[in-house]
Length: 396
Image (cartoon, rainbow, N blue to C red):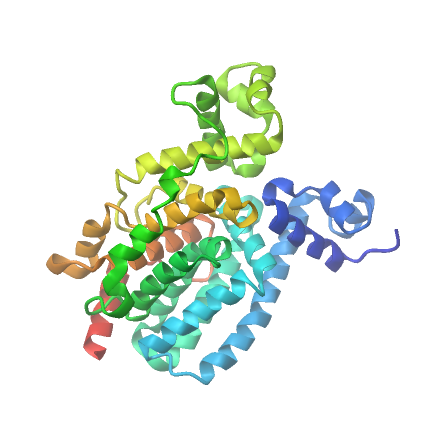
């Protein structure tokens, strides 16, 4: 099989995560994909945790190379013009979703797992800090005093938007919805909705017209044993990560024999689909209840992780696309008034700005939970967005 270097194993690990998620990552699969043996992989890299650490280090190096090219682009543009900044942010997301799709998928998976097990994904926080520093740096010439807040806000927004851009980038309704929220973010949430953002309600509706009629990937009749087991799978996925789900663990959690779980869900993929299906049903219910409008609160972190899990599933399986689209349009549903008042005062925010702010809260919360802030990342909460909006209002 020949001598395989460490870089080859790391590339194979990234490809495996992009294709199958963290659940598909093992020393055996990576060695097989690299055309080598587990013994050779263990010698070159170490155990699975060491492999993940090497991969995160490589992700940081890749980000640094990519960021260098984007800094050059930024140097040729006036990002202090909101329209220019909006196009810049959109192009950033689009490149990640297409040219850098494999690395972006792996990065989203690593972030999701790090929010559950920061110690097992040590280094993810440093990668997130790299993202913050990039955005702060490119905004520094045009925004000076607020460049740190604005840069961290854009980094946080992109963190929440990324899995949806990967999964839904080819969907015109999604792209129009995203354009409206990026527009309001680039405007610092200041002023009132103009242009595309004025049609935000119609854009949201367009993203949900068909999702309610689409059957779940697995049938989960209300009150059935199958639905009960699927709920346990969803809990395990949210608490311990997708990779943790096995027939044995589900059976122990539900207090039933392994054979009972296997009767309803024969394969590991069946377990995954059932858990995602239960998460979709739960999200439809819980999103009606709202969430606290500040990243310093819990933000329903398990719920937010679930929406990312659905988006990542949709990136690999078209059957989940309608549900990912539905989850994306529901950002800020039933909390837009609270979010708007927390940032805009008595007059609040328009719906597009409220959704952009909520996604910024979510992205910041994910980073903090994953261990971000090791190098001074800014927590983006209401106070920071109030300052951003006021500063951008003065600049109008």
